[in-house]
Amino acid sequence: MREVIFEANSQGWFDLGRGRKVRCALGRGGVAPAADKREGDGRTPLGNWPMRRVLYRADHGGEPQTALETRAILPDEGWCDAPSDPCYNRPVRLPYPASAEKLWRDDRLYDLVVVLGHNDDPVEPGMGSAIFLHLASLDYRPTEGCVALRRSDLEALLRAARPGDSLRIVAA
Image (tube, rainbow, N blue to C red; front, side, top):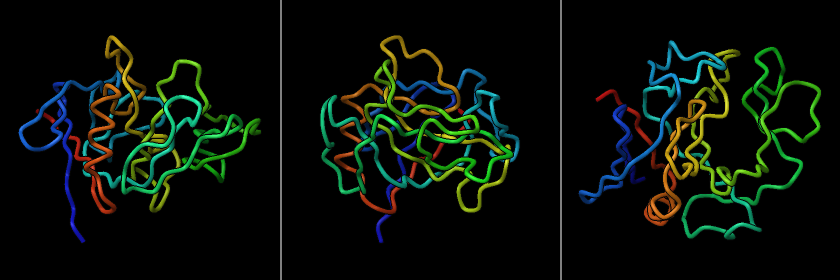
């Protein structure tokens, strides 16, 4: 199986391949080795993370062109970020009895989301949840620990991506 590695660096640059580098946003706390990543620290984990699947808002642009698995986000979907909960770092239906991030967002940052394989096999409580590749704000403000791209750049990545591809996050 082919594996293409897209790369984001701690200086805020993202390599889409073929010599194309674009701006990206990273965590408000900077980057950290995956072993040092903690829930809520705002740091983007360094490492090589498989691109698991793509979530999208059907009402905000529709299904993206990609060979990756896709699924539309529903208004009642969330992602559990409570380390003591059995569904930690997993999708859940809202309202949920433990803390969970809302996926159907008004700010449109989650109109396109690539779920990354950080802390998911196996899940370790407190080591970070909901580490995604998603849409950047217009001013590229820092994320809560994710990597974010302009919509056109994320769509270009998705068109090129294939199952088995991954995102590497490195310190520059």
